[in-house]
Length: 441
Image (cartoon, rainbow, N blue to C red; front, side):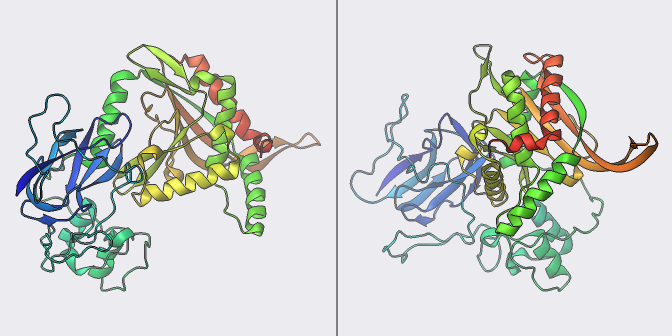
């Protein structure tokens, strides 16, 4: 028997480190080749690192929440056969080369495991392997649930191990906990969670370490605060023409049996119109060279709220996409974000970001510029209001109209106030004359 040191392989272009989110094995486990070892988060994507060898886990290196550097040791294995060797101390490049993840696997999000059972390769036998349960449930099954769901279960006295989750890959949702506590039938697969019970005051202080996506968000926010000198410009937009056009388009799409459009693809097209007049808004800052890099491609980031936190996915090549193509890509990536199936390429390369709270959009906000970008658009709630109008006979009347506020934040180091305001007015003009957005469709 010999020891083999498995090192964190390259898991994405430009990625030099990742946070250990969850260990899937522990010392003493017998594992097979390609069995998932650990979930590592990098650039807001959680990827599963598989084992390159069959053997016994001697020890794991690092705790959940720690940062692991690429090419640093993750797991020490006891393996059979010739060629298994003790890794020599690193002198720049590792003496024992870390097997790379296959191209089709690199950057894939971590699959949600319903039990920590070694998965043999096709045609291989699973006999002789051991399982390791980390959830502490009597049945040995690993329960998938967010910290919020686990805390709710504790407060309501519900044993998560007794539940069959309705979420993706068997994840236990808040609705499952509530239904069990109230002796109601289990909700249908992926049913929206019911309203949580009224929270009780904490008996003592609760420490919540920043881990996973929340820790990544914190690092990103600190980076933006460190570099960006922000200013925000807010203006209202008459959304009546856009709402009317969207209703007509969606009626025709429904007649054809095709997916309807949200407001977001129209907003994306309006931003492209703004970039045509003010290309410096579709840029990123190179801090090392102290240079503004104006991008030829329009890659829009869209904020998506998930149970783990805010994720920004990226729709590439918006300038050359039609409305329905933009809409389909937004829908696909938003679904992948909710199911934790985004890949690294879905999270990288944005040149401008759109953030929207939907129905909770409020009157206005000051969205935070996502460094190294230089601008971000905040989309708010559409509201109806009474609008005075002059009739043909000269009398004054009132009609019901609708409008929405748009908040645009900019990096004041490179975007002057009048440029930022002019850009937003260009976007608003395109949204108030939405027929022009259909010219290329």
